[in-house]
Image 1 (cartoon, rainbow, N blue to C red):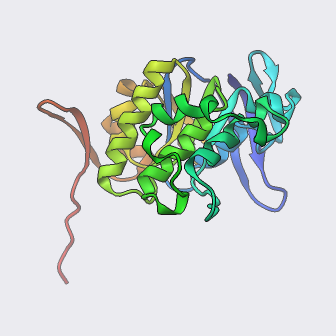
Image 2: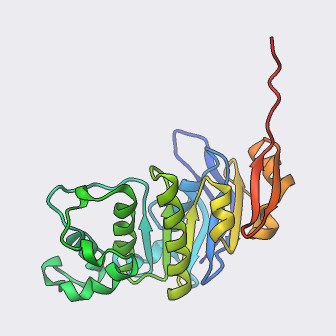
Image 3: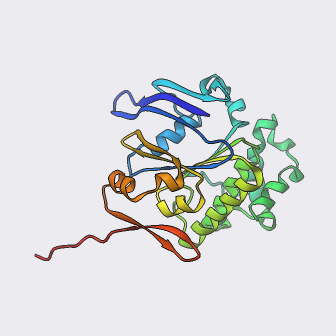
Length: 258
């Protein structure tokens, strides 16, 4: 998957993505990083086909993304969004079965056994008959990931997956995403706010600002003090923690007393 000179902007608004050219590293975890309003979620929506470029091309397997039917795209790309509509009477099992829509004309024909492995991958087998609303936020996020995996995609997109989760569930989710990618060899694209979460799981990073690509490369190359300071407009330092590795901290600002 690659973008070639992609531009996007709503007719009544400003340009949100400008001359964006980059290639998605296959079989790796790619994180899109940048400050608020940088265009991260817009870029992800362009990559999954929800939005169409006003100029330029997005190619999937050498073919323009817009040439794929919705069903064909769903067989390649699965998306875990920030917001999900919950149904009080829907069980975990029923929700995950929705991910099998690209392979069935009717959901009623999806057997329980067909989605059993996807529940197992996210450690929710024992919760199959539980209602979605009875689950914690972290457990619900695992349901959405299982639903996405049930599409058997080549690409898994997650838009700020740790939003609304406490620190424990954030950590567990990052470990799960890394493990799933390693086990399945799929390409994962994440939009994250937390730079240290990106350091924890990412093979590659796109650092963006004001809808433009500042730098693309390995997480080790892109996540450096000068680039982060410039893009986020705040001084940062990268320290090495024993048994953990690199960690990004914000340099405390001195507040002058009146």
